[in-house]
Structures are given as C-alpha cells and as structure tokens.
Length: 155
Image (cartoon, rainbow, N blue to C red; front, side, top):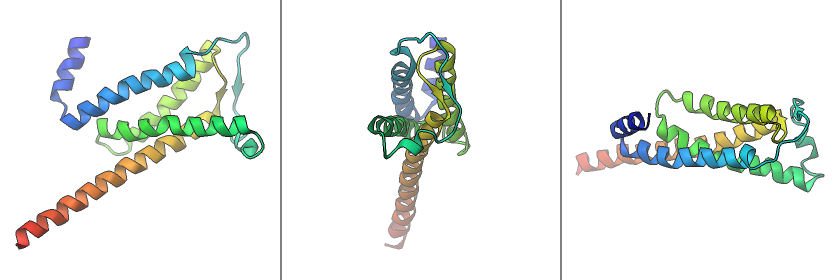
C-alpha cells in the first residue's frame, strides 16, 4: 500500500505533493483532537438540533470558544484540500463536509465527545473560509499571469 502511495505521489505536481504532505498529518491531528484524545463516556451523546450552540454564543464563553475552535480547525483543511484535489472544483467542499460528518459519526460510535450538527455547521464555515481564501489566491495569481503576459507582449 505504501508503495502505491509513493507511485501516486511521484505523478503529482509539486503543489499537490506539498498540500498532501501538510494535509494528511493535519487530518490525523484533527482526528486526535476531536476523537482519540477524548475519554469515552458511558452513554451516547448526540444533539441533532441545529444552531442550539449558536443561540448561546453571546451568553456562554465556553460555547463561544467551542464554535470558534471548530471554525478555525477546518480553515487549513479548506485551504489545503483544494490544492491537493484541483478538479472538479465542487469536490473539495463535498469532501470537507464529509470529513466533518465522519468525525461526528466516529464520536457517536466511540462515545467520545458530543455528536452534533452544530459542529458540522461550524466546521463547514471554517472549511468554506479556507476554500474562499485559496480560490481568491488562485484568482489573483491568474490575473497577475494574464496581465503580466500582456505587458511582456506589448513591450
């Protein structure tokens, strides 16, 4: 299996290799922070009511911190995943949301943490921020290349 990963990695361009070399350990650290490092509880903990934590955002400092951490945690994934998977453009957001859902399902199955829709919402917001930043950077790079090549041809 490792040999297969190496063969695939050799065929990828440098940007994709760098993105994957950062993304894979980051995903592992995310899994450690959200599941592995937590002690299992005796009961299943699940909250499917959307936006219940957001209603407490301004009244509970811990809830505010949790929402912010969930958003911040997924910004790098939103930034790196589109660099690793360039086309089609809609695939990285689907995978990003899928990663969040998988984490919540693992928490539910292993009884480690609270499985909740608000975490998926916060993670998705974070992913979309990272995704928007990388799309903006790509757009700027394309504009610079486009106008830079016009300047050279006109001189």
